[in-house]
Amino acid sequence: MAVRYELIKTCKQSGARLGKLHTPHGTIDTPVFMPVGTQATVKSMSPEEVKELGAQIILSNTYHLFLRPGHELVQQAGGLHSFMNWDRAILTDSGGFQVFSLSENRKITEEGVQFRSHLNGDKLFISPEKAMEIQNALGSDIMMAFDECPPYPAEYEYIKASTERTSRWAERCLKSHNRPEDQALFGIVQGGMHEELRRQSAADLTSLDFPGYAIGGLSVGEPKDIMFRVLDFTVPFLPQHKPRYLMGVGSPDALLEGAIRGIDMFDCVLPTRIARNGTVMTSQGRLVIRNAKYMNDFTPLDPNCDCYTCKNYTRAYIRHLHKADEIFGVRLTTYHNLYFLVQLMKRVRQAIMEDRLLDFRDEFFDQYGLHDN
Ligand SMILES: CNc1nc2c(CCNCC3CCCCC3)c3nc(N)[nH]c(=O)c3cc2[nH]1
Ligand SMILES: [Zn+2]
Image 1 (cartoon, rainbow, N blue to C red):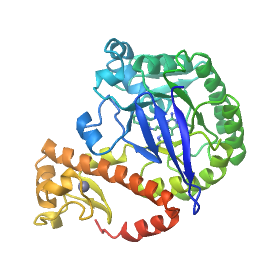
Image 2: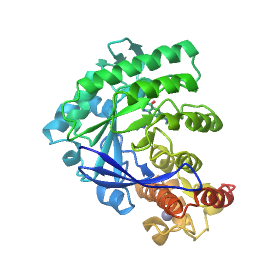
Image 3: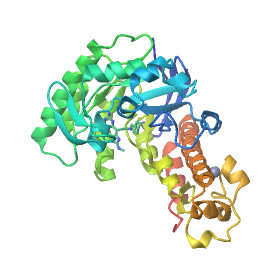
Image 4: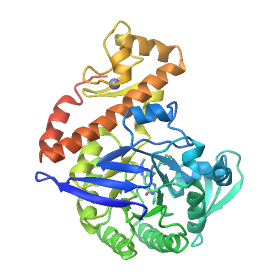
């Protein structure tokens, strides 16, 4: 079995649960935040640093690696693990979402998606079978079915047709999956913000008996309370004994609210992306390090953080580096932001163990948001 989910404990105070995800590249404690490594690297971090800050699994992407350097080259390198020297788990997204968020003039048909490369304008095509071939070449431990993430907002009829096509695509992915013992294929539930469509999508996918399920189609610009409501009625449609992955979700409050609703896996580009412009997540909320008020501030980014950045450098120094466009400044804020989210999930797991995740959420929010930047 490529990936096996072990349900350890359910929280008595919330819908959260503790689990272990056993993969060929190690076991992952859930709920887990997964750092994103879009182009076969977690931007500016070495694999040793990503391990040191506590990451057990990272994400990479079919779309980006298909375009550059090409999945055949990665396959010749022996797959993504050896290509990027990462010996822990890797999850690859199937590329559908990135086609829509990155490329120009896309055309969707039953067969698949036609699009132009955002790099050189080449006319390209990805089908469910192609997405499986690419992820197979990359050798990720967890592959995602090829899906369409409908835009938000969208007409009910469009979302219904798109969701039904995504279910047909999921079946095609399963049929063309030729290494189920090495790579686990997760289905992606769609259905927009509509309970009936979510129920239908979950029924279609659970009848195909995937080893894990993602909830897609969220974190696409909808208000957060709508996202949480969709989770409230979608999670119960999924099997208790399989992992649930909420795609593209990653702000601290969304991680907490998602875990409380029974989500086990999260990914988001936020911590690495905002680090590049010097925005830092701290226990008191976000701070923007370029702000003049940190010029003579010789305290750490976060007084409650024990990461490499916070133990060795000050806000004044990191502000200087970002103002001077020094790469080391980005490395220090990236390391801290990733450490912050990985540690947050460690504290969430501890709170679940103690049946007090709702209390922990309240304590966290009391602290978070105190920063006026
Ligand atoms: C940010 N919000 C959001 N992201 C979604 C994503 C992408 C999740 N992150 C993947 C990483 C992105 C950077 C490169 C490495 C992979 C979604 N992906 C799929 N397949 N389907 C969604 O409905 C889907 C829905 C999503 N919503
Ligand atoms: Zn820190």
